[in-house]
Length: 254
Image (cartoon, rainbow, N blue to C red; front, side):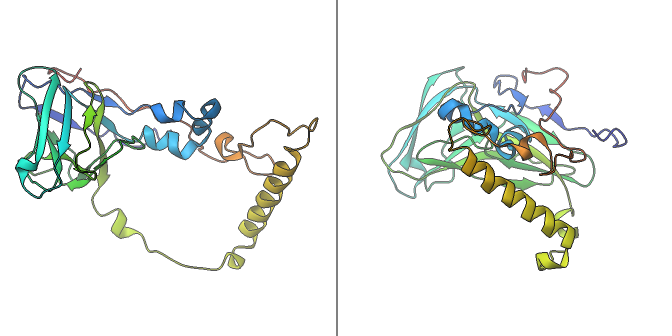
């Protein structure tokens, strides 16, 4: 979309060939979204776009973890159910935190950080992915992916090939450059008119959709999904999918 943008590199330097944790572009699909009626969740474009907004780290093993609720590192038990002898999942910090040791050292261009977070919209009962922001343009130290268990005595399984993290490059200083402003919508008359037109069209559609035989009956409104304004004109640079590249080169990240 932005052909004038200079190409940037995200490099994963392999530290351990004995742990194969694939790195793949995030895809649009999630199991729970498939299970919504008629897969309706996929009509929420913000969800679908977020699912694709980074590279996923996939588990090299199937592990089952259980936490006794205590603060000690020994309070979390990790049972390896499938995978190579060397498992990267363990308990190091205590307090029910599951740690995944990555076999990579990541490098970003100068001035770029790497947000290491949980896979977007990937839900697991009893455990929550933690997030960290790392300056990967200079730091020679590796980092880990961590999940915090929230339910004692509740076994949780990560399957081999399941996403355990998402990597999202962020340019350092971009957030700080924003100047947040709180204003009245009345100060933007054209935008206020557009908001009003959208609200009226949505209300009319919802009413008509309940009337058998009407054009709206059984339909679902999707102006944002299609990238159109209420009057039908198209939004500029509307994006409905990501096209992240796969990692190239040697190593076991295939």
